[in-house]
Length: 153
Image (cartoon, rainbow, N blue to C red):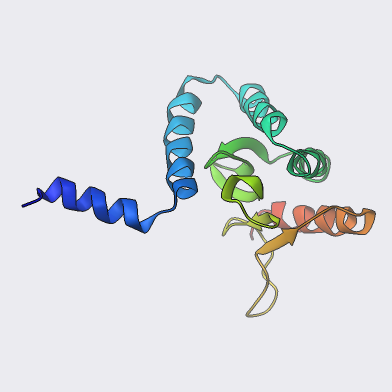
């Protein structure tokens, strides 16, 4: 008969894809490494290094989104979140980029968390699929990031 630990491990293994398990390991490593980093510049370097590791077209989109966030919401702090670039305020993630290759998806995503100020009535989108970035997409993303970065009243 399998031990409780073995059964729990089997359930966890069946419940998550290899990519999801890798993301959780990335997050645990990020927490340990963040404790060693000394400030915002170190966090930004970690984000830039992660972006540099990405294959195209993810890398190009992540570079453009990073530049847009830094220009439109300079108060947001870059950081790694589950192995992907994210931008936070007061320790809470406002927005993030998830590369397509990380989860073997057909598109990358730009997402916004609860800390984002994007409320619009009773329903609004919080994640956007990205297959490429056009000039019009960049304008829309800039607007979303600007709005998301506003501190709630």
